[in-house]
Length: 263
Image 1 (cartoon, rainbow, N blue to C red):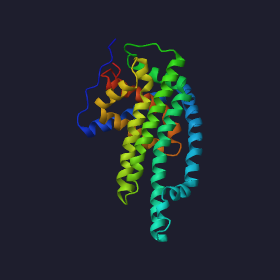
Image 2 (cartoon, rainbow, N blue to C red):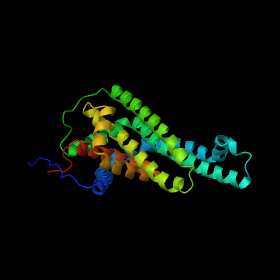
Image 3 (tube, helix red, strand yellow):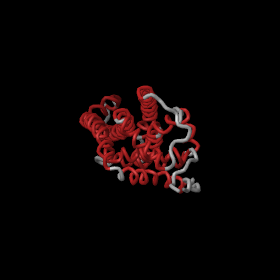
Image 4 (cartoon, rainbow, N blue to C red):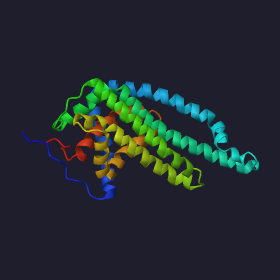
């Protein structure tokens, strides 16, 4: 029997980015071939999605009050300037809220659905030759480590959201360039979160994930940004999350130079 082969590396920044985005589609193709896992994979995402949708609806409901709260210096301005500033501020708040909601959704869903997503990730790896240097980690220890790493990543993304919020107040730039930057930043954090399980199986922690993905930054950004954009589509996060987990297993293997094609 032929052994799995490693795909020839894609060259060029655009090629690497598109190759990373393509891993999400491959993850979807692998995932939908297991009907039993489809339902199991959607349930945790549905629970997390409902919780965070409620939080985001609350943000939308109170965004005008929040915009006024963070711009008290504009109270004495003319109504036209004041209203314009607060509309822009509200849009910036919603943009940062959306970024945090997507990252938090991924973290919460991975924690809630850890057994299901671990199974999906394992099946993907088995399809392409298994996990080299497999390290057995007790379930509760793996769950605790995953939760701690997720909290750290959400906290860092919140800190990154501050300058994005400020930049979002700049006319035109804040409504054009900043959303693109936000998608790339969100995509990077999603990629770091989603590869957690396959890295843990190899005995590698968050610093290792950062190092390896940094060495494959463009491909990782392509994958993470594709996931981020899909998560912004209504119900996209619920339906795509299991495929994103499968794609993350492929991203891990490709980043580590391991087979992603069947022989």
